[in-house]
Amino acid sequence: MGYVFNRKWLDPCESLISILWKFERANALPGHIVARLMGPDVHPYEGIVPELGAVNLERLRENLPVPVRMLRVALLQPSQRRRYSNVFRHCRHCVAHGYHSVLHQLESISACPAHHRALETACRRCGYEAPYRVSVRLLEAPYRCASCRASYGGQGWTPNTPLMKAEYRKAFTRRYFERYLG
Ligand SMILES: [Zn+2]
Ligand SMILES: [Zn+2]
View 1 (spheres, rainbow, N blue to C red):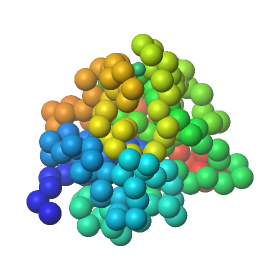
View 2 (spheres, rainbow, N blue to C red):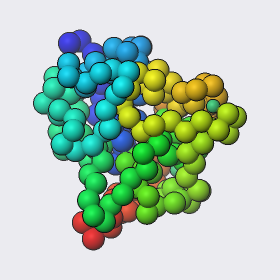
View 3 (cartoon, helix red, strand yellow):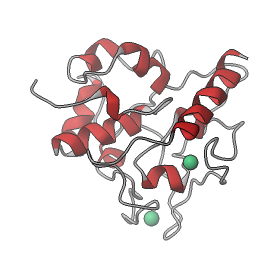
């Protein structure tokens, strides 16, 4: 469809929201257009929980040139052992560089695997907790509070943002394998 996206922009275990925010920034697209990538049966304002089985990966791949393998990792995979927060949960250091991980949503993880800082859900200015759904509301507010628009800690991602440090990438990968395969 003529959209640009480079898979090299992605870091390990990046969440679907994080991927879509980068896609939006790279193509200067408004959130309501990106929300439609989720398929005609998903209401763009109501949105959808980015969960394996709920998201139509075939449909998403038509516009988003990201390997299916990476999209599967980007989705929540709930099980008996794995529970996820239903509100957007983030590390301020990571969001400042435009990164959010599926691991940040895991209830059993309370600090960022890379920065060891407590994960936050509430906006520091207004206290709003954003529902963790791919919806117009969240897509229209990349790296900031969807209610008052205060930044979550920095400017977020641009195509010039450098990749995450190797040690941080390793920290996410290691934790992913512990939590998902251990
Ligand atoms: Zn972090
Ligand atoms: Zn706020």
